[in-house]
Image 1 (spheres, rainbow, N blue to C red):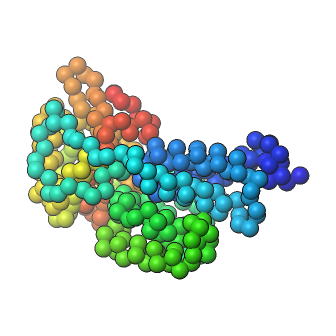
Image 2: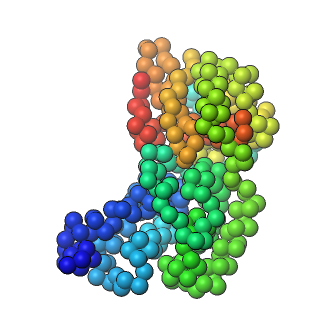
Image 3: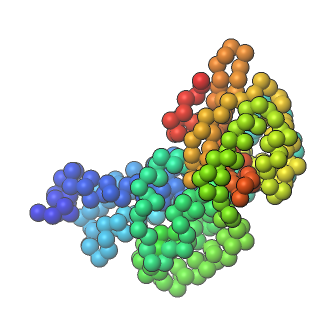
Length: 325
């Protein structure tokens, strides 16, 4: 008896053998759709439950992998359309009084994705229609741009341009037509082109190490001038889900000065998120305990930093980092 027949007969081990090879890539897919690790995990669990309960209806016209992507995509679309999506968050000004932002961000709900969860996913063969590399399509800039797309355009672009499914396959997943999918995809591509989310001239590993080391020295010593020297003219800083954005070197410098000169300083613990260098930021306190205040993620271009994104300290455990040192 084959795995599908055994799974249909209620064999849980057979079902796991069918689905486990696709679990990690489905989690990344749900994250791309929802921009939230927590929501992606919920959608993944819903997908697996729906697949287990609906295996009797699996016709075999598509592969198990394609069938699972159909379920996962529609679970994510339901989440995106629900009224319960989490709103923007206000900044707690009890510790730092921030300078006036350049603007308020449009895509405020965005969480980082640990590189440890990408293991094996970037080696999954892509379909013939894929236009992006796996790592660049998980970058923070790309994820931010995706969140500005309407749900069906978002699904069409990820399934076609990121994963490389054919238009006919995507139409079947979305219970739509090839013409409708193509139209949604074209509109999504135009929107994405305006955002221009892909990093240009990303550094190689040795150059990245050098930039990161300079950043750590400047940040930990509170040397704002040295930090500013690492920034591009068009650098930016944001702190989702707080909708404040700072654009341009002067604005980012003012933000960094406000944070670094307001207290006893920080220690940084390295990690990686969204294929980019990141750090747990720990505030030094008089009692000798360094308290985790957030995760800093760097976007690099050439030999410079073009983006610094701060996430709340609640994400630190996702990266195996403690809440205090």
